[in-house]
Amino acid sequence: MDEVAIGTAVDAMYAMISGPAGPRDWSTQEAAFHPDCRQIRTGVDAEGKPWRLSFTLAEYRANADELLAKMDFFEVETAREVRVFGNIAHVWSAYEARTAPDDAVPERRGINSIQLYKGEDGWKIIHMIWDNERDGVPLPAVG
Image 1 (cartoon, rainbow, N blue to C red):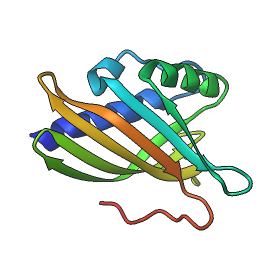
Image 2: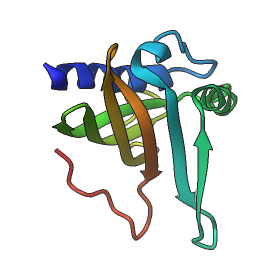
Image 3: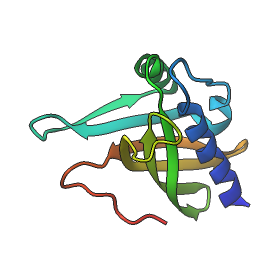
Image 4: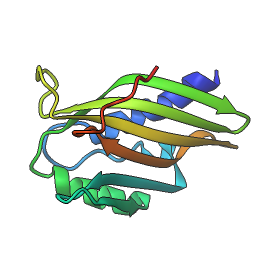
């Protein structure tokens, strides 16, 4: 039962971010994400120096809407590994991003590291951090 509820939250996250250019439908964000959630995008600059951007839910919505206003973006989960202990869970979720759902080659691939908390209102995403595959950092096996 827990893994089904956890999967529902993760599936909702992917559905919210994916779609044609334009603002996303954030109406299900409250059901999938804890109000205290932090979302962290990571990467490296041209010199290989690591960077991160950390967002509240509202900051993430604004940032994503700005980025995706003129860009089709479809993120699809390709593998999932779930670990549950008590009221905490960790999901290691591999993804591919495409500019069209039927693109043969993904624009990028990466890993979402998703932590969930089970409170009185069920499983909700409380933290996410992700990174994209790049030279020297291949995707690990997931699932």
